[in-house]
Length: 258
Image 1 (cartoon, rainbow, N blue to C red):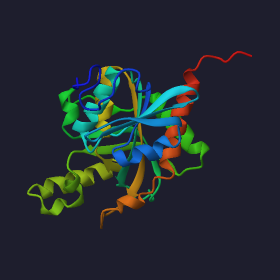
Image 2: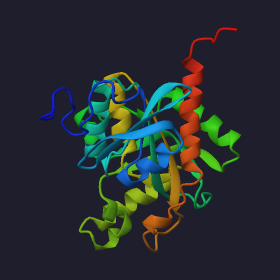
Image 3: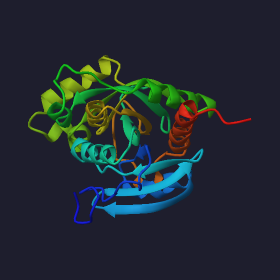
């Protein structure tokens, strides 16, 4: 716990400040942009890489909490959010395409994640499959289709090293990295990112729902340069993720009188 009574140590939020539904961008700078799609959203906490905003959709509390980069920090966010009442989490992130059929700005609805990282191994056996909850997959897919957004549903690779992907040739284990990369591509993996496997593993252990929608910000088959962070193609992604939350709220809401 943090030095403030009742608040979680890292995300600095307490009971009643976070909704049951939470959107999880990596970058704290994206929280306010996403919060603009909620009703009456306000920032409730900011500590380290974790910034949280809370508003409502359909009269139900919904939050946005940034996770920072990678599995360890994402796992901390999920753990602490669950402790104070989160039950449905949707990662809203970016990825690099691994298949040539994907274009910049396309949305990937994540069905499963390759556990090419270390955090999930601290939670579940290596044979355990990192899969998204079916409710999140259905809601995200329906939201993307309704918006007419180009999207694919499938598997992504979750990794720990950003530069191991961007500059594998200078690493002492270059041959292994490049062989594994080609194996994922040949296995039909759609894209590479850094958090999904950890989010799915922690959510499963905590008994909550988790899913992910990712915007393609680098096109396959090669990465020539890092994308401009100020010009990432997120315009399709954010409304799809928010609408998916709205759809899940409606699916579980009690009938309205009259």
